[in-house]
Image (cartoon, rainbow, N blue to C red; front, side, top):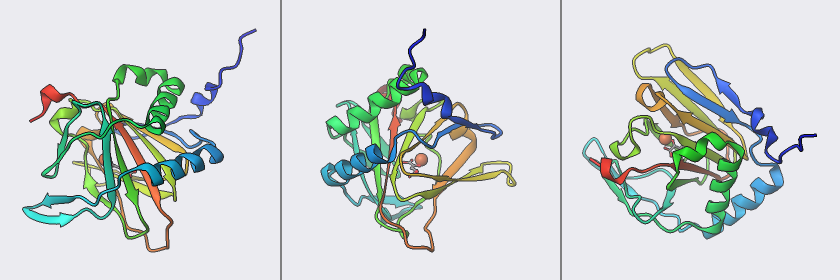
Length: 213
Ligand SMILES: O=C(O)CCC(=O)C(=O)O
Ligand SMILES: [Fe+2]
């Protein structure tokens, strides 16, 4: 008899039917109790910062808090912001290991870094962008874990104006973007009208230091 593995529910992932993109969603990646615990640990342990970025030549504060952790050589630059990695914490390593155990095809991505974003309430947001910096390589694989309040993850195709998509990312869910997704699509987290409790999002990434522009 084949013994059921803890991670058999990897089949729970659904592939989103999007042109020019490869996106999978695992709504129940963590059960509520585990997700609650991880939220509390990360909320308390992370040295959250509100970074200043440059958009269209103007300096402004990001409308959320963030932190960058990873291997010592995983430096990341976007919107004029140079991020030096903070070390991995046990909670971050545990989440990375859980993702790699449950979705073994991601092992070959060799995630070496994670960007954490903290959306304090419904006013915090992330503007339209692609995660397409040179150091992420040509077809970035990004594993995005949501803890806390659900927020709408919006996507729009860069050249087919009619192609757009919205998905509510729930507490404990995992979204994987790979293939041509960053080349052809933008994504964003808009402000909400309704009151919203804090949300933490973690995006595990692979930085190739030699490709940095
Ligand atoms: O908060 C999210 O779900 C999206 C985060 C994101 O797009 C990013 O960190 O690049
Ligand atoms: Fe992104």
